[in-house]
View 1 (cartoon, rainbow, N blue to C red):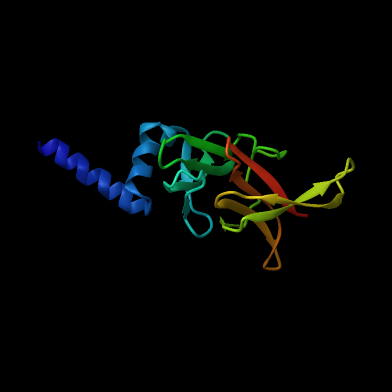
View 2 (cartoon, rainbow, N blue to C red; view 1 turned 180 degrees about the horizontal axis):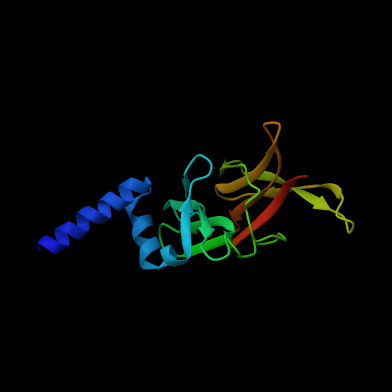
Amino acid sequence: MKLSLLFAVFWMTSAHATGLPGWFTKSFNEKKLNERYLIIKPIKPGYLEADFTGDKINDIAVQVLDKKSKKRGILIIDGGTKTYYIFGAGQKIPDEDFNDTNWLNGWRLHKDKFAYQTIFDANGDISGSKKVKIPHPAISIYSLQDGDELAGVLIYWNGAGYTSIHQGE
């Protein structure tokens, strides 16, 4: 009895210390993600919370560092299914050519129903943009230049899985 009470106090204290909801911390540890990834908070807010998948249950996104490769990324744990998704941290970001988010200076929730995807030609030059429907809140990660968003990626659930679009330069 005392051991389970001690564990419960430790678990609640650990969750409280990170500022993350207890269900997230529990899932992170149960899936042994703590063995490979370190939750980092290089920029504010420390985590993003929204219903990214449209199932009416909030999900949590945190920034992580892969302990071996030292590459940064985004980890999302689905609040309903407790399934996790990694973007960067050594894993390719869908529809992008990189696996490290060490360049990002900011992140935020994108709640607009549309966004504009930057279109590049075969030479890598910007050739225009395309309006894309964003069905649920998304994660906008971006770099800053002189305090303004220069370029970034919007990570969102398209109904079948996570995908991304490039925004800006």
